[in-house]
Image (spheres, rainbow over the protein chains, first blue to last red):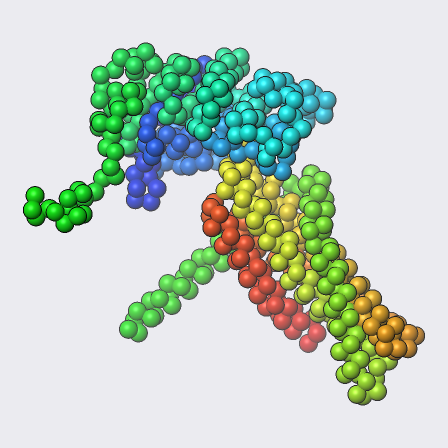
Length: 267
Length: 259
């Protein structure tokens, strides 16, 4: 099977508010796949559904042939051992040092001797350029560095699937470029599959093999970055070229300004 | 009007029962997950150290001052009946039966309980618990259970320290300052305090309070809304529910133990 993750006819809603409707997506093994879309388009929800932190109302999410939404707790935890996830703000354990944060999954899931754990952690930190920050606490490093530490922690157990939730949000241009390169290099070095949720067009297109565009909980366009750049789809054009006018309205849907100002009758 | 009132009462009652049922199920979940700490006792001992450090100073100082007050008030009352020789007994019984376990539990709820709630609530707000789940680590086993058992173990130890310092405080005021006979102070205490009836029942109380206060604290933290306001509300709920729970349980236990 060439796809590591397959999503079929997926429906998800929070209470009465639909988030995803009839979603179908494939994530090919060994690739970096970007999922893009505006705020509230359901991107992060997809990651949580793949990780089993949310359960869909209908449809299926399959990871390596296992239907995530049908697994029991034991099966879910077994599957999660093969996944890594980078949270938007890093979600580092604030009471632990950088070293202990990266060592956390190793200590929890292996009985490796301390010397080996130390070597593995330092290698992971070396890969993200923060070996010399090993003894610092998360409060003592910048947001961009915290994101890189979280990345080292996410790949500590060499996962088959790595999920990134807005890895470029709030980063300066240098950190953004460094993080993007890391995502690509780590994916290729580990032979993993990466799902990258982002709304940063330049960095995502630079490293992704395939891109999905989401709008209002459904895929509106998909293809390689090159195809997306050349796309004439109005949504993709508006998003890629950051245009104010297009299918995505600037104003939250509702009454017109004239109605609110009581000018409707005169108009 | 009456039907609206009835429906409001019914709605509130149903909501309370649902919450109680959910808390009871969570309590069972915590107990069932407790085997994890037997395999890694270090997680509990670290938390005992942490929680003990939080509460030791306030418990020790409070115990001493409560002992001072007991010495003074006890002397004034007993002196009216010419029984000031029984001051040691009065101080010791008051502390071991009631004040030791109850005041320690109330102080523990205010000091360590709020800290546990805020810590777990902020871990949730900072997605640390979600990150743990994604690392295939159960946050209940890794975060909640060690803190829960640390609180259960720390509570009787702190209550013992409170009572011991309280007795010492009573001795300082009663014997050293007021001049009650030292031999009578200690011998009446030794003769009148029963190991099982008084001390063991006090220890049982403090263990029960340990279960109640620590569970309320970790439960409120784990169920807190992941926002600053949610964590603040959860912390307040910990103090209110744990304090009222301790006082209610104290009445129940006293009625059962000393009838």
